[in-house]
Length: 216
Ligand code: BG6
Ligand code: MG
Image 1: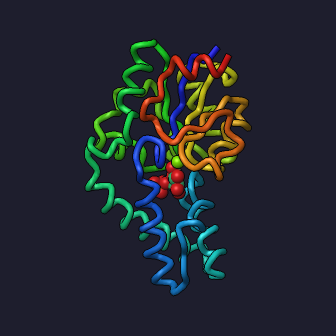
Image 2: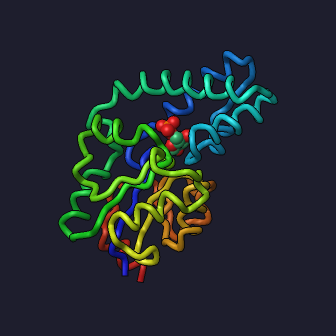
């Protein structure tokens, strides 16, 4: 029986996936190669350094470790400029209602995000109190599709993995949830989420009662 709900952040709770893309695109522009939104799908859900590796591979760029660290840092500075503009109005439609329903129905809730900026974002959105535990990129060694971040989240809410339901928008995240032995709801584009147990376009009009029925 589902007892714990684990939410990815970027692209699930808030559309920061777009800001990640814009910041990486700025770096690609500087390095003088084209980087499309469809290529950006491969960067979703994975850690900052792993995302940089994928980007450089797309651009056919080779660089020293020192240079890579410098570029990742610059991208993060640009990304954090976008984050400053975030307000509670940027919470994606239906998410707040869903989190409230989860609390009313006494589910344990956790964040399971690769981002090192997760707490900043939750603060800006003023929803940090909806989470019983936050597992983020500051606590993990391995990027999704490795299950580390979700297993840490499950441990944090004292919930066995098989009783956790994960909400994810990225292919690497869906794989990570499955690798953790959890059920997964894909949020967003069905073409990249086909490995999810269920797929919904977003949280609007999504109710826990419906999910409970589907999970049985
Ligand atoms: C994930 C995003 O949530 O966080 C990835 O989907 C991103 O695109 C990763 O690379 C790391 O984020 P940050 O904020 O630590 O650079
Ligand atoms: Mg995501």
